[in-house]
Amino acid sequence: MTGAVKPSPLDAVRDHLDKGGSPYAPLVLLLAVLAIAGVLLLLHRLEHRKEAKPQANDPKALFAAVLNKLGLSVVQRDLLRRIAFDLRLPHPTMMLLSPELFQNHVRQWRQLLNEREQDVPEGPLRLREIAELLYGGETAEKVARLAKRIKVAQPQTSG
Image (cartoon, rainbow, N blue to C red; front, side):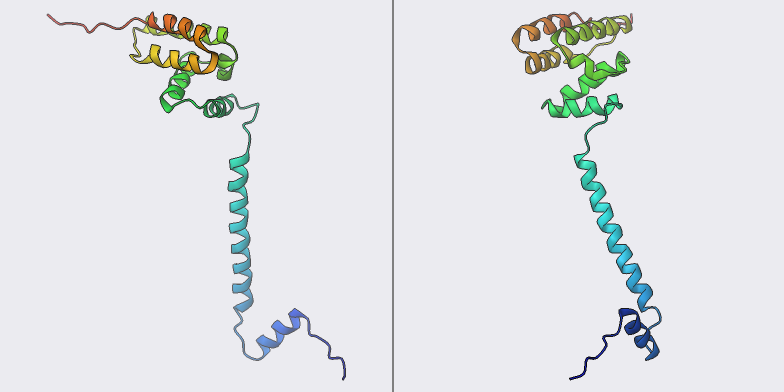
């Protein structure tokens, strides 16, 4: 038994082409491999994006991540985002660090709404719920008292 030399893959492709095979077969094979690699790369990036932690240098992303982790409802998260937006807080997560900071920001927001003569009808109830969830009963009562002081704009009557 004589040892036959196994042809290299390149020789096999060259032999196939010499026998009249499609000249586009290697190109199609290359495109298929690139497409599969592209799909795998896309899946990897999507999975990595899910696992990515918020950057400490992105205050808004950190705030959104913290709000999601706290288990707040959509309405509660929206209210906190509105407070942060209205007060133009550069680092909105700071308002959640302690009961005192939270109360201070609620107080500032209440004053701002009073100056603008705006109203948030369910604001006091939602803020009380948030404070109860984050800090417990005593803080929730203080926040509820602060938030209730928001003036309700009276409809103007024309006469």
